[in-house]
Amino acid sequence: MDNADVIDRFYTFCKGVWASFLNLVSGYADATHKADFDYDFGVAFMLAVIILFFVGSACWAASIASSRRYKAIPHFLLGLVLPWIYPLVILFALDIKGHKQMILAAEQEKQEKERAEAERQKNIAINTDGQAEQEAVDDNGFNQAHFASIIRNADSEPGPWKVVFSGNEMIVTKVLEALPELVSVEVQGDGGKTFTMRIPYAKMESWEDA
Image 1 (cartoon, rainbow, N blue to C red):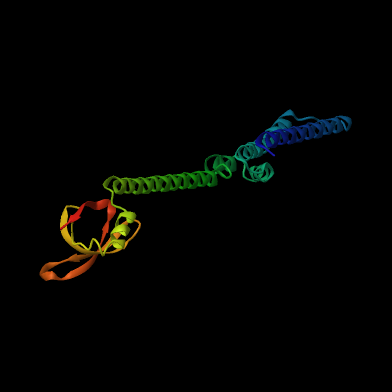
Image 2: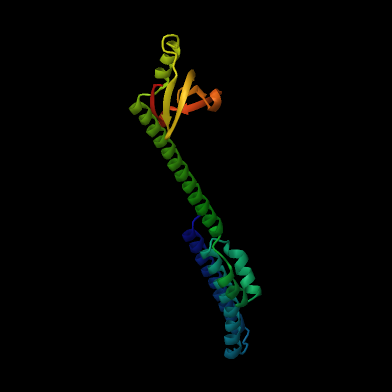
């Protein structure tokens, strides 16, 4: 049931209450007339004002509640019990039903979209870096197949080799293993000692016989 239906039903209810009140007053007037009672206009006017005072408060409270997606009848009754005080209180204190939940849901949806976008940008950056490294490998000619060939021909081409990568120059005495993105080699250090090192293809600048 949407707000329009609630307001329409409430309006119909108020019309029925008012019609019942008028019928009651009319019946009372007829009874007093037949009984030859004196009609006191001042008393009747005060009675009408008092009734309108309470009913007006109740209707206003119910109207505020229904406009903010709450059931009208409980607030109508509270408006009768606390005339004009209760409607004024809920006018400023009663939030739209579900409004906070909608704001929270919208904020959560925004955060999820931001996380998804950040993840997408991260994946794009990773793919771009990987593509750049692969292009660098393709450009300099150093790859797994190249060094696998050196390993296979170790007897005829035993080395050593002078290698430059990332601006560093060193002597490689043996190619140990060719991996998809790097090569494992044996490097000659100070004093003739050797140690194992892994060199990424993308950072390799030159490889030539020593």
